[in-house]
Length: 457
Image (tube, rainbow, N blue to C red; front, side):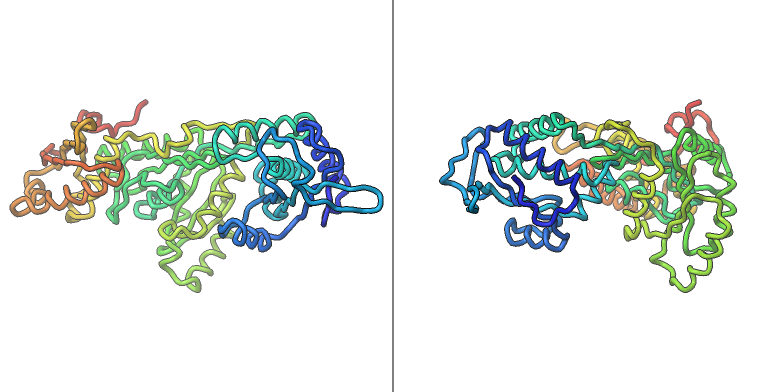
């Protein structure tokens, strides 16, 4: 028996009664047990969490048993509260609170009905009342198996709507593509600097949550081609648009929007969905931006337009939801990479990029474009980890500047690089950087291949 304190939907009442009876049957509970069920607001469930669990959170379901019970124990009548009426005596084993809004949101996430989600939550809550828990892994397996058995027996399934796919980020140089991918993934995937041509190849960043995996490709910025490396970068951009579900077209709120859009749309070769992102809205006044947004919205041939700030994280959650709406849906977990990975780059590559990032930040504008870094040895078995790297430039004069007076510049580059690498690897690091000259390497096919910048045909 369930005391429905505010449940009015007949079909739902029937489903919950069936779950109640099935759990009672499987666990050999006494006849005429009662569970109090109440649907509550987010404010109410937050209050319950605060007062009873000392956490400030909105959860989907809470259960409060009237006595402590371990799985497999028989219920003793003396342990429980009784409700007496003229006809019969019923045994009340506890209270269940379900947050209606959270249940509705989760139903949309899983791609099934509110009714099915509530059935799952009620089953989960009633099992808690009967001594089941999921704090320890072994207990979690017992509870998960029992939940599945109950719902399968009643043909009530919690459908899985898993979203996954590939998303390519394109845009001119310095519009914030690397900052955006780092923010979305929640990890340091791509290096960031105010210098142009920071990204030279496609960088993969992987977003994971319980119901989705989004594989982002951060591409080099569009700019006027001046050498063979620039040609290779253009090939990287074109390749990233092959077999992608979505193209994120990034433009800056600090420059004329329509002009940027017209230049960028010519570069889109994919037939994928297109989301136009206006980044850096934190750096402009809304009064200046709004008229341009209105004009752009009436002209742009894209599926969505979204202003955001990658640096501040503003509207990035909205972007994730928007992306999910366009991704393919699977009835099973479909991940292209393990759930604990956030990039396909190895540590050698990431360390080399960190060193290049620090060089870009510290050196004069005319030098960074000719800088490339190769990690030649990574001794992870040593304590501290010992890393050797070669920093290449194109001219002897540039080498002198990179070294600095009495080695001051390369020392500063090394120190800042080491600190960032230690954060990345979670351990102490000894870093040795050797500055070398490779004349005109950006027009040298062999050097481009040796540095790993070439595009595989």
